[in-house]
Every structure is written in structure tokens, then in C-alpha cells.
Image (cartoon, rainbow, N blue to C red):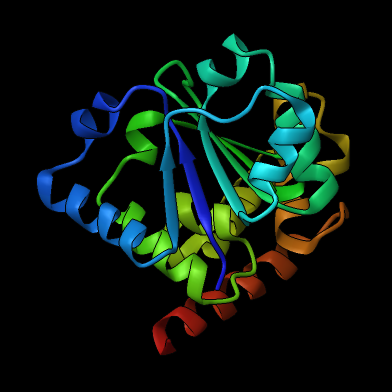
Amino acid sequence: MKKVIIIDDRQDRKRRHLSEESLDELYGLVENGMLTISVEISESIDNLHNELMGYDLIAVHRSYLTNNGIFNDVTDFINKHNKYLIVFSGGISQNTMLCKGHQLNINSKDFYTPKLSYFIKYFCSNDMQSPLLELLYGNSWRLTLLLQYRYLIWNYDDVDDIDDKKDANLAEKLQTALWGECYTKSLDGINKEIEQEKERRANS
């Protein structure tokens, strides 16, 4: 069974975003051994790595990382050991995927939602192709990304010729998330994948 840790130095943050029922569900996962909730972790690099090694997904508030000077240590750790990292904060205005789908920067209100306990339970008990994308978009994450990618193709004749830096970065991230490498798909090819994904979702 996989395990998750949430590191949040302010206990009132969860209560601000979650109902008592959702909090009870979250703490039920602690009792089941799937989840650890902590207010701090070690600032020593060696101890930090030892503490986090037993977890497959680490969720931590951004200010805790930056205030304790361990942001780079934690991101290096998840990259080295193929873990997943969620960095949440009320100051994050746009939810962003990084590190080839292994890091998600997300607003606190989008992290602490009623679906969090369900996501953790499912993550710990099942193999998930792209767990952080599923946290963001649910089971329809692939369809959502395909539709975003098709929109880019509609706006540009060729995604390789995108001159807007923001759109070019988005296209690259979408390609990596969808196919694992960056390459151009034709509009016909995207439309076919969208229809296949819709059919798969309808039959699931």
C-alpha cells in the first residue's frame, strides 16, 4: 500500500476549507495507515530524506518550504526517488504541473476539498497513470488535456510555430502529459483521440 504525508504548519488551514465530515474522512485515512498529517519535518537534509522515504506522495505548504529553506531539498528528493509532490498555498494563482507530472503547485482551496480523502484512498490502493492530473481534473483528465491541446491547434496552423511563449510552454506541457514526449499531432489525430477518450469514459 502506498502512503501519503501532508505537512502543514497551520492546523486551522484545513478547517477553513473542509467541513467536519470531510475532516473526519481525512483523519480516518490516518487511522488506516494511508495518511500522515504533520506540522513539521526535519530541516536536516539527511534526516529529511529518511523521514520522507516511506511516502509515495508528499503534500506541503509552500511557505513552510521557503521559510525553512528546504524547497530545493524536497524537490530534489522527489526527482531523485520518483515521488510525487504537491505544493499548496493560498498565494498560488494558477495550478501548474511541473517535473514531468511529478509536481503540482496548487491553490490551498483547490487542494483541501471534499474529494481529497477519496483521492488519497484511491492513490494508495491503485496504480494511477497520472495521479496529480487526476487530482486536478478527476477521471476525465486526459479528455480535458486533449481538448486544451486541440484548442491550441485551432489557434495556430502548426504548434511547432507558436510564437507566444506562454502558449508554446503550454503546448509542450500538454504533449508531455499526454504522450510522454513532445511531438506534434495533427488536428485529425487529436479529434480521433478525443472521440476515443469520450467513448472510453462513456463505457467505464
